[in-house]
Image (tube, rainbow, N blue to C red):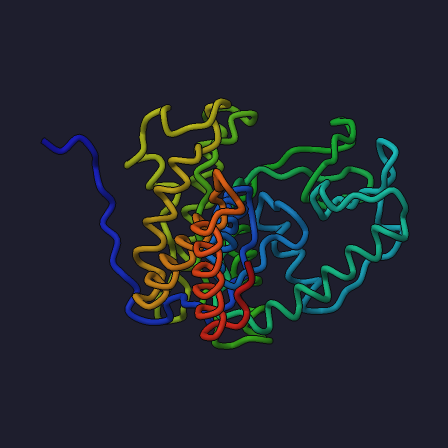
Length: 316
C-alpha cells in the first residue's frame, strides 16, 4: 500500500553541483535553510548578503545595485527603534550608527558582485507576491522594520511584473557571468498573515511567472520545493510549532530530494565523508585523556587533512 504521492524528479544530466561549484542563494527564509545544508556539507556557497528577501523585486534590487556598483548613502536610511535601518535589507544588517550601516551595505554590494561573477549556480527562492510600498518615497521595500503600518501601502505583484523582474535578474547576472546556471524555487513557507486565500494567490503568481521563465536550454531550472511540501509532506507533523514553516524533518526531506538530482555522484560521496567528519567532531568523549580518544582524534585529523588535500577550500 502506497500512503504517499511522489513527485517524479529527473537527475540533471549537465551542470550539476560539485565541490568545485560556487553557489549564491538568494531569497526567502527557506533559502537560509538550504544554505545551512550547503554550509554543513562544506559546499561553496554565499547566502543572502542582504538577509532574507521575500519577494522578487527585493532580490532584483540587490542584484541591480551589485552589478552597477550602486552604493548606498546615508540619506537612503531610516532611524527607527534606536537603530539605523535600510528598507532594502533585512533587520539583521541594522546598526547603531548611520556610517556603520552604510559601510556594511556597501561592503555587501562589493562582495555580492564578486560572488555573482564567480558563481556556477544561482539559487533563487521566491516567498511571496505581496509587497509593501513606502508611501513617502513611493518605493517598494524589502523589509518594513516594524515601522508603523500607516507609512506603507500593500500591493500584490502581477504575474507579468514578476516575470519582468525574473528576466531582469537573469539578464543582469548573465551580463557579468554568461555561463551561470539558475535554479528557481518557490518557498513552502505559508504566509498566512496575508490570509489563506491571499497566500494561495501569492504563490500562484510566483509559480505562474517562474514557469514562463524556466528553460533548461538557457540553463534556467525549477526545483519543486513548494510542491514537495504541499503534495508529498501534506501533514501538519512536517510543520514547525507555528504551523507555517517546514520543520527540521521536512527541510531534511526536501534537501535529500534536491541532493538526489543536483549533486554529482562524486559530490554525494564527498558529502557523506563530510557528514561523517561532522558527526565525529560533535562527539563528546567520556574520557578525553584516554588512549582510545587520542587515537580517535588522530584518525579524525588524518581524515580532515586527506579531504582538504583534495578540496583546499574546505575548513572545519
